[in-house]
Length: 571
Image (cartoon, rainbow, N blue to C red; front, side):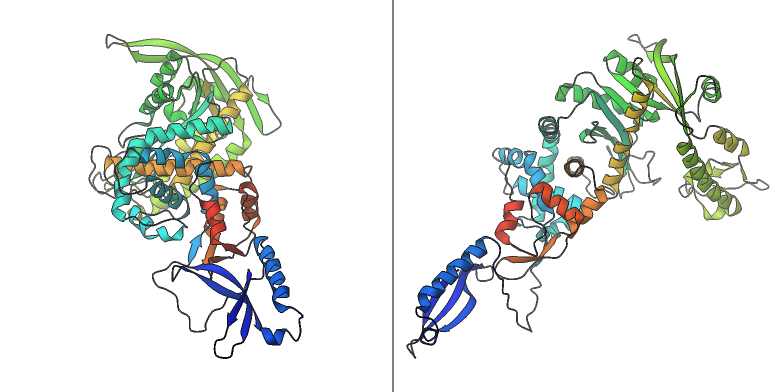
């Protein structure tokens, strides 16, 4: 703020006003904006002994208030003012917290260093930020993401072609970026890898014909589309460690050893205990874990159990009740496994395992409710089979006897005189085992309770898949080249990593959905003189602001302050 003296050449009078210089983004020039008009000097002299001295001090005081963020702001608009159809005046500011995490992880510096060795006309860091932040705040196709690029306070001097071309670069850097995040997790967050969690899911593509990677397989969404499999490894804190893509027809159980071998080689991880669901509980996986000196904790199906296991589960002997809702027992057992030796012959061997059985009334209620929902649909299917196809009733169909499908259409086929009916024996067998769960482990000396607690941590990786599929909208996938597919899932992986860090940094007080929604709502609308109007505040914005040193409680914020929060700099 300063005192401006303007001479009227016709009258010879001097007009005083307090002004402030600001950058006009329309004219691209610095202009003086009148903050407070004062009047003609000769008129002011009748009221003030020395108007210039007095108002110079006033201007100086206003300038100090301005620097302290306490100045009065005046914005002037005309009644007929119209919007510029080519300008996005409303921008997202919530990504400032993601930008700080991104810089903390050293991704800015990593990509800037990689840039030096690539002869490309686009900025890797700028495009990777666009793809990762958009995946969290406005997930869409690469084309739509490019069209929405003006929502951020970032440079947008790049083309859609550059976005697609950069995917090949990111694909080549995928392993290096994952390894960078792993090392930062160790350095900044004390990552421990004595216990790791593993699970597999798949993602479908909107194409009809399969190719080398996208193949028909068992889709989690029961879709007929070609899919790719993803194996994801996670630590005890819920932070992703790495992922690996497999062709869509790869069996889940065949994905574990390849990803563990890569982690051991590239990440320098020593012995670990891998925790996984029953789909990974195979002879090969358990034997290879033992051969490599690792441990495992796998669930074991009680519904498909052997007669011996079923009898052991239902035998009340040795159970120890913990309260009136939970009971547990365990024993050491020998598992017979069949493996192929060096001569190509199948040989049998034995593994000693700890087998833990527990019953939870909470699990029992959940099983009964889930089955009843499926039975309601099964009864509807029996009454009106023409309304259902193979894809529409996967959970209910297992309770229906005499059910056959057309291999081409998936429609139900009924032979003349054939009736559909509920499989009452199957229902009774399931009811008998409601609430029971089995776990097998190589850790013979670990207490039962500790093994169960470790296994329960598997829910976090299952939730991570839900986040990638729902909040991050990782599927369907709209890119087709193999390297572009890899780059797509890399950006999803980094986005998930940032979200998990964000949960951790806010002490796990808020769900992923709440954090994403809040960041989406933290926006600023351009007013004048590089000021933006913010219009959303909540408990979550206050928590984010406190964590990352950003005052989201402000109603007005200048561009230079916003840019100080969103700047692409490593810390």
